[in-house]
Amino acid sequence: MSEPTAYVLGTDDAEIARLDAQAGSIAGATQALLRAAGIGGPMRVLDLGTGLGHVAFMVADLLDHGGSVLGVDQAERLLEVAERRRAAAGAENIEFLQADARAFSASEPFDAIVARLLLFHLPDREEVLRRQLDALRPGGTMVLIEFDIGAMRGEPEVPLVDAVRRWIEAAFRVAGADPRIGTQAGQLLRRTGFADVSTFGIQAYFGPSDPIGPRLCASVTRSLAPQIVAHGIADEAELGLDTLQERIAEQVASRDAVIMPPAVVGAWGTRPPVTLE
Image 1 (cartoon, one colour):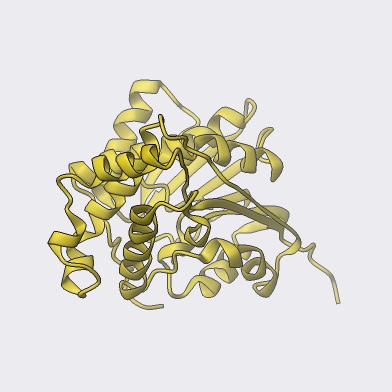
Image 2: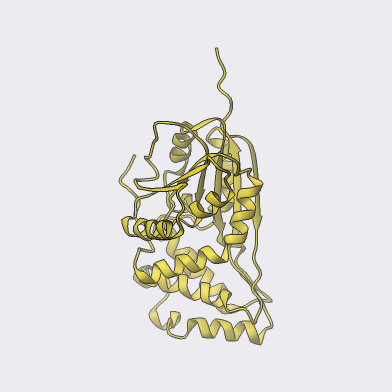
């Protein structure tokens, strides 16, 4: 396996704030997908690429007495924030561990593994899934939650929203990420040996008076601006970061439009039972 993949958006204060805002915007979709996949009861769950622990906390709330969550991530600074939040919440059924999610292995199998917005960043995603297949007990569940940026748009059309989607998608692709990986989540599970695969997506709709849509568009663009400019995707004048959020909001309002952010796609499957020859 190659060296750990760098997280292209970084871990500074602005990125932590963006991750918190993003997590809030997709919390409802994430919880619905976790419930649909059967996460609950006294499960022992692994949260791969836990970051700030948003999914770990959500999973812990779904579990009964005796259930536990182990959140794994390679970003020390994000884990420090997650651990402070865990301690403040008194969440004794959550543990965080610094490790490369692609290579992590535990001494005992898990009842379920969840990974939100992880495969998005991994070029060796199929190898990672095959490895995690072995980390599940037979009949255990693997849950993937990923974005499909291809679903992002304004309706009616909002030119700046279209431009933002193009900038973001191009920047992620030159960094080796796949911003439409959600469309392939189910197929990835099937190809790597999981059975009984289910998948569906959830789309949010932010109306012209809702500040979340413009704020999310602008914040991701701001985080990716160094890559966007360095690779000639757009220059600083085109981005206009100082006024981007306001200009998006103005275009949305003038068209009485709705912003649809990237779809949140869930896919889950189970480890087939072990058969004796």
